[in-house]
Length: 189
Image 1: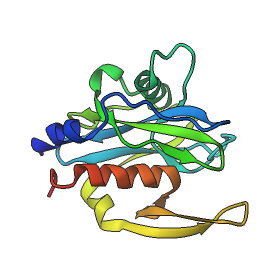
Image 2: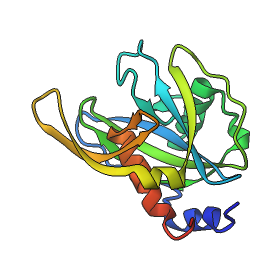
Image 3: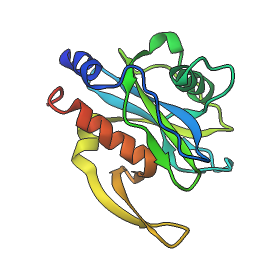
Image 4: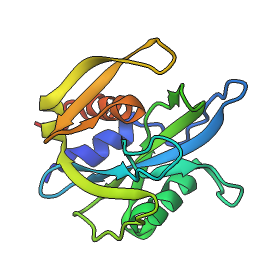
């Protein structure tokens, strides 16, 4: 276990984010589930191929804010429970990473880091999630690469990517993962 990691993250993450929306943007939130033991590891999902947006891509559990959500933190916890069966009571949300804009879909995503003592038992909603996997922060750090990819509009996307046993993490999820690694710097070996 890494006892300094929770305190360190509490000190560097935004406890009450207030994202600035550009005209036409929609607001969403994701939960970045960080399992502390036996070593800091992330819970990631592969989205169902049947979804209209970002089908088959790696993501953190999350989605669009809904009227019943009292705030974006509640959105992230609700979506994680709906998508992967993560009990909100088992999660300690310690703050938010910088918001990430998905230019293709016009969504501003606020990522909340949620700590879990150990890997949880999960129940996947097959309509939304094809697969759930866990990867250590140390492994993510070791495979992190700056990448360029072509965009559908002919432009070039430049960002962070992670090849984890043939599963590629990139886009908004890659940016969020990079921001988490920066936030955790110094608290994990």
